[in-house]
Every structure is written in structure tokens, then in C-alpha cells.
Image 1 (cartoon, rainbow, N blue to C red):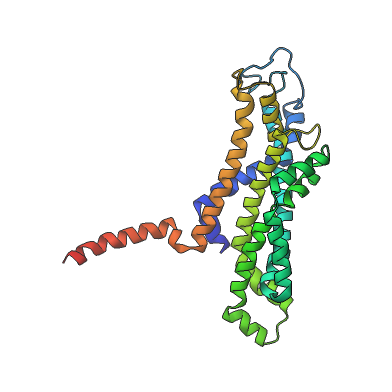
Image 2 (image 1 turned 180 degrees about the vertical axis):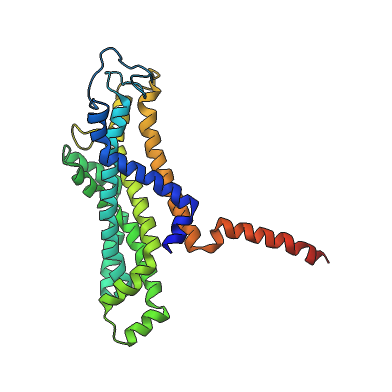
Length: 299
């Protein structure tokens, strides 16, 4: 399973890009301070709002800060919020969806009602209100707020998949043999949902990055920190588009888009592995089979 997963070209490209951003988030601040010998807020008074050059590879902001340094350091805030919110949302979805689908009964009705309640809430509006109330809090608080409204869709997916697996022959046989429900869930049911959970985590991660960027763009979030969203927000606030400073807002926007594309590639790869009909190799094989069969049909 793992070898087939890693042999898929889309998965390799997507995971490679995702790993590069994660490495950038971990080592970016050290690289900027030790190798580039600068800070995201350092001002070069001789290069105010200058385009990319040898001294500033991605140009400078209107106040004179290096855009490359801001993009590198900003990866930590954006990626860490995305990953943390995705982990929390995935865990909550699993804790709600799997027991609901496997155990059924009153527990299922209660957890389903709880999930539907969150689905009907105006999630982004509530996220704005709560994030605005705790403005200036640590990045993990922002991640927690985002995760609180990300899990319901995943919980419904896991519930329906668990209900399907609960009726399979192998789970029925294990129950007849007296296997405990806890072991059935963790040893038999959960391994069959690895692809769904991994795809759910990646989608939640990118959704968390987008949500953090949206909050930062609206001026809500951690105070004094740099993220891709805050870079775009500052560029918009100082009319970078009207002044033609494309190098200020395009790089962080491309980073967000590239992270979303990497996630989509991994999810496409997971779909191809879990559904052979979507496999590119199988599609080519079927085309060759049809071409070979056409002369036989004509005869």
C-alpha cells in the first residue's frame, strides 16, 4: 500500500512540495537571521519599494523590508496554524464520526445532532467574531478557533464510512467471535479508512492556511507576527496594487496557491490508488484494449 502510494507521481510531487514548505516553516527563521543576516521587519532605507534585485531577490516593501525574508518567516505562522488546526479537526472528526457510525443507537443520534448543529452555524462569521475577541493571542489559539469549525464535514464522512464497514463480513465475524468493540474500531475499522483520513487531514490543513490568511488579511490574528496573510494585508493596506508593487503580494499568494495545489495532487493520487478506474496507467491500458478490440468487432 505504502509503496504503491509513493510510486504515484502526483503523490510524490505533492508530498515533496508539502515537505518543502514544512522544512521552510521549521528552519525559515534561522535561515533569515543566520544566513541572510536580516529580519522580516528590518528596513533598508536605500531600497524603499524597490523591485527584485541582486540585494533583494524578491524586492522590498514600501517601508523597505525584504519581501523574501518576510515570505520565508511567514511560512512558519501559516503552515503551523494550518497543520495544528488540521490535526485538531481530524481528531475531533474521528472522535465524533467513528463512534457514531459504529455504535449507532442513541449515541449516533446525539452525535449526529451535535454535528448538524455545527454544520448549520455560520462558521466563518463566528470565526471572525471569536478571533477578533482574542486578537493578539498565540498562533495555537487561532489554530484552535479554526479547528472548532473545520471538523463537522469530516465527521459526517467518517460516520458514513464506519457504518459501511460495520456491516462487512469481517466485522460481523469478529463480533460473533466476541471481539471487543474497542479493538474492532482500532484494529479493523480504522486501518480501512487511512486514505480517507489522510485526504481529510490534507484538505483541513490547506483550509486552515486559507482561514489564517483570510483572518490576517482582515487584520485579525496574532499581533506582531508575520504570515503570508499579514504580508498580503499590509500590501493591500498600502495600495501595493495601485503602486505597481506586484513583487510584494504575488510571492505569498503563490505560496498559498502552491500549497493548495500540492494538497490537490496528493488527494488525486489517493483517489487513483483507492479507485483503480481513476488510475492513469489503467486508463491507458483500457485505451489500448479498446483499440485492439475494434478490428475484432469490425470482423
